Length: 94
Image (cartoon, rainbow, N blue to C red):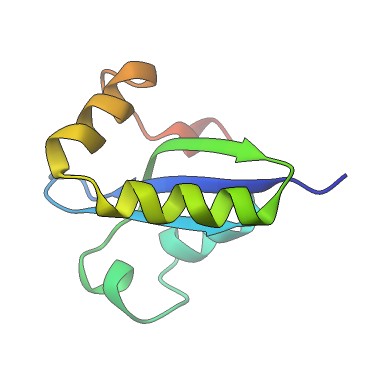
């Protein structure tokens, strides 16, 4: 069974948050860290994975991503800090 991931990336300054969805979280974080895809994430150096959740359903993942993207920043911060209060880069352990 394939899983889909909704994730949030930030930079070292915690100034910018970016929410995305992928079916391969390790690959996608690698792309962020190595700036392999030009755009918003590369422009703001979003290399720290600070939150993710998974689901077996792509429609659910896309819907969740859209909901989170529509939230105000303070609500996103509460979500992040509910599982990662220190904003550690979760992917460092990989």
